Image (cartoon, rainbow, N blue to C red; front, side, top):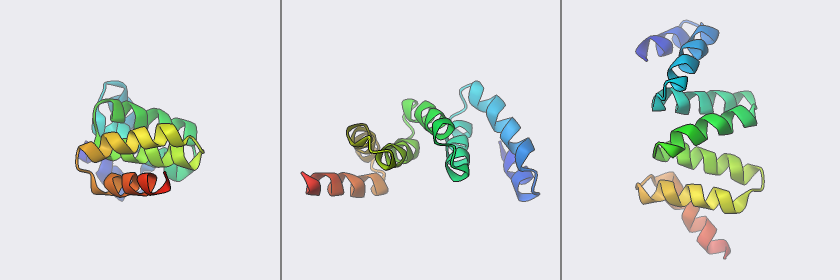
Length: 106
């Protein structure tokens, strides 16, 4: 995994993405989360959601939070709240803040 981040530092993004795709297909949580972020920054919401969901389903609190943000931006508020709660239960502070905002609105 470290090799892929070295490739990014060298400007070889496409090669890094190829590595993450291979590792993500094998269930690597870090690669799935990284691809979620990568595609989010590219504005590719469908791909971003796919990889965040895979990592979130493995219990990754940060991916659960990011998936919640993505869903919230799409107006899918109930699903977003569920993601925030899952992440907050693991003491991920940005998600705890979002849960507070959700409760404030109710």
